[in-house]
Amino acid sequence: MSTDRALAPDLILTNALVYAADAARSRHEAVAVGGGRVVAVGSAAEVEALAGAGTEVVDLCGRLVLPGFIDAHMHASAAVEELYDVSLAACRSVADCVAAVARYAGEHPELPAVRGYGWSDTYMPRLGPAAADLDAVVPDRPVILFDDSYHSAWLNSAGLRRAGIGAATPDPGNGVIERLPDGNPAGTLREGPSALAERAFPPYTLEQAREGILHFQRTVAAPYGLTTVQDANPRPGRDAALEAFEVLQAAGELTARYCLSLWIMEDQPLDEQIAAAVDERARHTGPLVRAAWAKLFADGVIEGHTAVLKEPYADAPEMCGDPVWSGDGLLRASVAAAKAGFRLHYHAIGDAATALCLDAIEAAAAATGGAVERPLITHLQVVDLDDLPRFASLGAVAAVQPNWFLKEELYRTRQVPYLGEERAEREYPMRSLFDHGILVAGASDYPVPPAPDPLIGIQRGVLRRDPTDASEPEPLWPEEAVPVEWMLDAYTINAARALGLEGEVGSLEPGKVADLVVVSRDLLSISPEEITTAAVELTLFGGRPVYAAGPFAGLAGD
Ligand SMILES: [Zn+2]
Image (cartoon, rainbow, N blue to C red; front, side, top):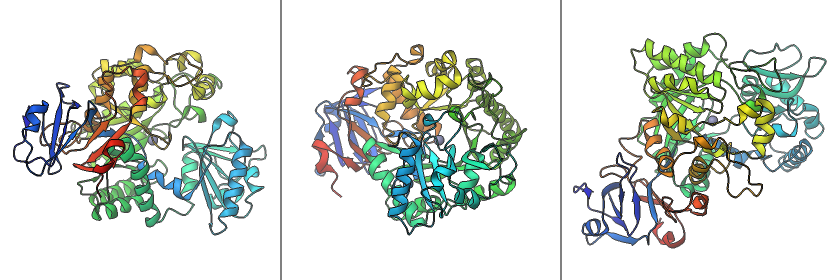
């Protein structure tokens, strides 16, 4: 047994399988929690012997206890859109989307502008949807609708005018303005121009942002057992979520720890952005909210032809995709952010984008005398395995989304046509990352998948297919599958290390914060096909139940 005897237990969870996610991957029968910390892990007899008069002892009947799940790359504050924007997630065609927007705009005459999300490039590969379709139903108010990757936006004509994008707007270097034959914008903007257009729309208010975070905690974080998450991309001076996190922290209303990655954009003055980020960081002194990261995009997405590839697109042999930053922009931004003391957080989808990130990390390390700590690269969809030795030697962290390790409909419609069969079959390496000694952290990229359940990620990391898919596709690159323990580590201790929080969370060891989850079935002994039949039944955040279901419902006292 290991204990921290300075703390008397308030709660003992016993007759369990406790996977500690410590260096030894040790397993125990019981865990004691007191003062918001882990007091002890050990055998049932050892831990139960610590019980005092005020200790609640709960028999878990063989359930699994894990450290609270950690998601190393997602967009927590984006949950606000579910409350205040129109969802197109259920739409299957442009006509569906137009009907949904018409209905929503009709129901909300008070809104000066209409925002929405969730259309898909699968309706119309190569070119996005048209402004004219939206003009027919909302002619007077600006409309902006993000796609399900959030890298493309579909606007009506009033929206394009609001964004100042017209026939005379030059083609930007950081994305695409799709055009009609007469040169007028067609309605779909990709990458940089979509972000620029969004900035012309009213931001969410502080109250909306606060409601959005509470909604995220209630519907996503607590029920999925997520106790630490990233919020990638909030923008100082634009996103009220930055202030909302502090308002909620002061009110004691946070039920997760938040790591904020401040977006440094390619189309805004670098010095001003770094200065604003430094000011913003100073407003977040913890303990539950930290803004230690700078977020930089190296490229876009495959289905927008904006991911940067080493070899051309299969359906567009003239294109490899353009980097988001022109020239040595990514390098200079990385050096500036690192010099200002930020941790670096990169979006890279294509293999050439990963290589650009490694160049930038190398430059930032050189410029700071090696003071670049655990730079994080997320997505890693197409990766050149020859880049992995350099990835490892730079100490870069891989934040992967096993959610996508599948050969399902999106693979067939949005990957094979763009990448070709051979390259698509070697998407999302995983075991190779581990084998090179790279720290691999689990992540979801929520809200891209609206249900960022770590149990789904764990299962797909092990199987690389979805056993509930009736069409039973083959696994995606089965040689890259990893054991379940590796996946449990990826969503706990590895993600904690990726975020620099391993001293506080990520494993169940005496003295650490008591962020933990009880899972209904023992993931280590059931077949991987059954992992998603298990569910989180209890989430403790700092020792406090923030979600309790089934037999534990009584524990969520307040
Ligand atoms: Zn993301």
